[in-house]
Amino acid sequence: MEKQLSHQQSLEIITEMIGNAKRNLARGGSFYFLLWGVVVAIANFIIYYLINFTSTNEWYYVWLITVPAIVVTIIHSRRQMAKATTTGPIDHLYGQIWIGVFVAMVITLVFMAKINYAVNPIMLIYAGIGTYITGRLSRFQPLVIGAFILWISSIIMFLVPVNQQFMVAGIGIIAGYVIPGFMLRKLEK
Amino acid sequence: MSKFGQLDPLLHSQLRLAIMSSLISLESAEFVYLREATAATAGNLSVQLDKLEKAGYITISKRFKGKRPVTSCKITAKGIKAFENYVDTLKKYIK
Image: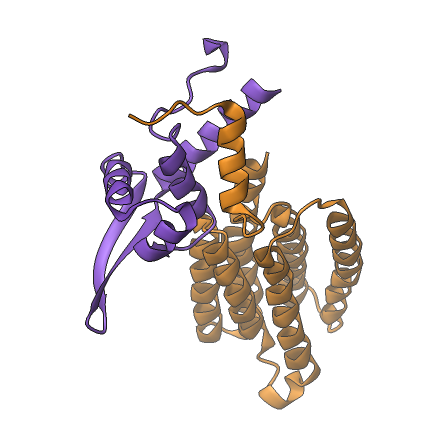
């Protein structure tokens, strides 16, 4: 039979085998899902209210609440990087995926006049891509499901009148982004 | 010693622990990779993989890469949980 392992030997085997390629479940990732999910969902609900129940035309200023969210994201990610004692190749990838998503969103927003301002569903498609890859990489199924919810929401948004899109987006983001974010947070603890 | 709970006997073995530690950080690993990583003999590795598969900790699939048959292993959700429990228990012993 095999020889009995000491605890120290067990630990050495694990550390050696895992090495630096340790699969990390996007630790701390829930912060971003919750932050952005809540901010964007609230923005959508406010805009829905403003468009449907007030006469204001300046509803797009609501999007300015994403500016502090960007600042918080940058500060938080810097702090996390400084705190981390180990990072694997995948850890960097998470950030890079979302930088890619962010760049795609900015380009779309800058040229929204060229695409008839139909940016809302497209934003959800982008967010879905980031969520899908994050979910697959971390093997966290709720995020993968969340991605499909975001994509389905975007399809619905293309089909409903513009003034209804914001409600669909708000609900889609809560279901596809905030709820998986909460589940991830629970897992991190 | 038992006040911390038992270490999973299925994982508390040099080769099986090495296999599981490899698989936890990979999407899937081929038999050849595992044999090199663990420096085990093919026969012994097969036996241990079989035990892990029977416990539901890994899945083993065989397919063809061209004409060459390839065996690849994947850790399951149950396997991940078992591995994490093992590490948690181990931590308590070492503290």
